[in-house]
Length: 408
Ligand code: ASP
Image (cartoon, rainbow, N blue to C red; front, side):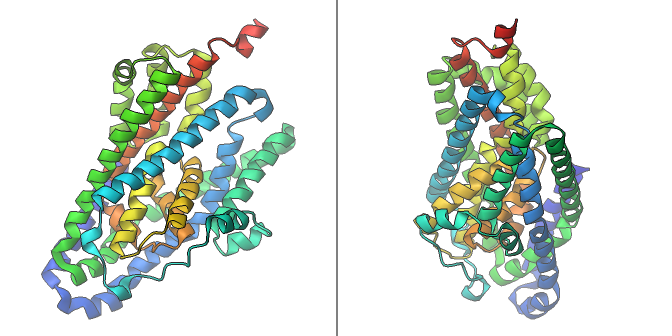
């Protein structure tokens, strides 16, 4: 079903290119009047879900950590590793995209480029991150304050604990499920949405729209390889005292499953089995670090946000400032916590990151057409990162007796 949908989306991308090339720029008037608005309706549907999904999924992500005090040392260490590797992933995404420059030949004409928000300085960003009124931030779809509020809400719920927090956990959990279902419904309209968003672009720009899409895929593939080889090899070797060759050999099975299913959550059982049996990580570490990682650690998704935001900026001829890039690293890292481990979830979170720096959401249509391919790379990186951190945590915990051993 899911695969069918992505085939449909890809087919609609191809169709929009073919129809657009056949029609040529003479048809731009009617296409803009009748087709483009349908694309805008699709984008609005996605926008509609950003605030609810961020709120619910971040609270669920936080509360899935359970009792913060009890998990203490391991929890903080794991989350620390996750955050740092995720931030590095976005930076690698930017770096590769700055070299490959996906979308650069495609710059849409000036009037097509929606106005980009005035970029605030990084200190302003930190000040504005704290909402004075979370409801107002939600109403304005001001993402960063909503994220911060959600994190506090999650932390508050964890520390209240007991039956009262259970009620809220269940509520947000159900809310997140409902959001995912609604998003799935919206995504069923994606073939139509993508066609209507792309047709005007192709009609106006002709065949030069194709090459940039290929360059996004190439940038993703290069970025993921660099991140895996440099960051995970170092984490495994330096912190985990495991040779990178052994690490990647042990991970092959899980990586193949992730590549084909595009789901971290779906790959979790295989990843847990691999990490325990082939990489020799202790069971209590595996059963804490990997499920948490499948929920909150998405390096591939973060890298994708770096690559795609630069791609979309290039497509619309927008120059990203350093402050905007820092903002993307910040929101991207936080957004990846809230990304569900299911196919296509990263695309919705990309909408959120774009919105946070005022980049045009219309660029999503271009990415959506090739998203399944990008998802294969990012999901593979996502689950490999979880295992690398498990290896590292296992090594650092070897000298410290675990809670289990103390009680035994
Ligand atoms: N499909 C990814 C995963 O399951 C999430 C994403 O779409 O970025 O890890």
